[in-house]
Length: 68
Image 1 (tube, rainbow, N blue to C red):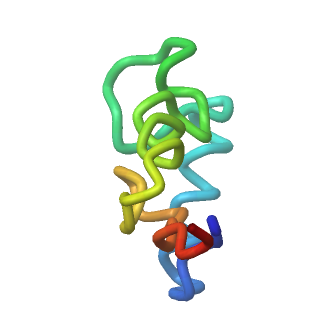
Image 2: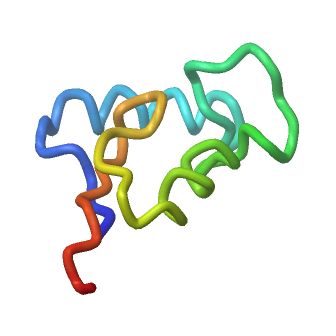
């Protein structure tokens, strides 16, 4: 399950950065399809049922898949 960070200040800060960078991760220097939110790195992490943690910019959190 993927959810927003529970810290509303972080969410507001990252969303403002996304607006300024036209939807690209504000934590990345590169601006390309791989850095468009939800970024390629986090999509790959989401695909791993054993992964649990935040995306690079900490906007999203993925819980481990416990439905086995």
